[in-house]
Image (cartoon, rainbow, N blue to C red; front, side):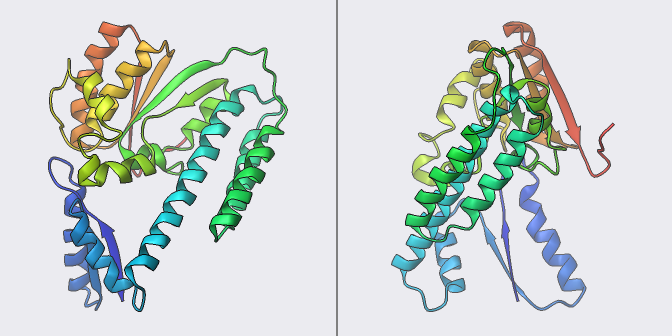
Length: 269
């Protein structure tokens, strides 16, 4: 009887989704409550409090803290898998170990069990046989948050690059995105270094992850990366802006950039 949906504002059309979904479902005579979460954090907390019936603020806070730590742990395991995959001796072994490590972490439902699961998952990944004599290419993956984070949408491009011998890095992570939504961290949080790096090309935010795509590419180029993969949904306005600017970054910093535009018709060749 309740639908929880994120929302946004500015040039990113993500803010329209909840409104359109509501209109469509109402026209189909569905009865439900639509709760949208945006950048108004105090208002978001009040909305979520209604869902947590019978729970006090301390219990809600602890649930959020545990959820955030669990997500952060999963991200750290994923980062480790990206570092190990280009060195794996048996193709696919790092991915299998990562999938099992993720299952171990997902089964943890207390702080103590989460700490134990993290140690077990890390150990499992480090047991993957590696050839450390290799010199993998370093590739940065930038772009719109959903298409970068969701493997199904981007056709598991990070896994494919890793198995081809590339060490993959990316500036977009769910926990960083969540932190940047908090007003106190909006200007001083994870996005600050990307704004600073992008300033010669874009002096203000253009919505979505545009500033992160540009700033991330600049930082990766300065760190000696071998190339960048820029991922965007079809007609995404902020990433179209980023794509145009990245052509200049490519020339200025002499770094190859491949832009992939994805939609529902995208498939593997």
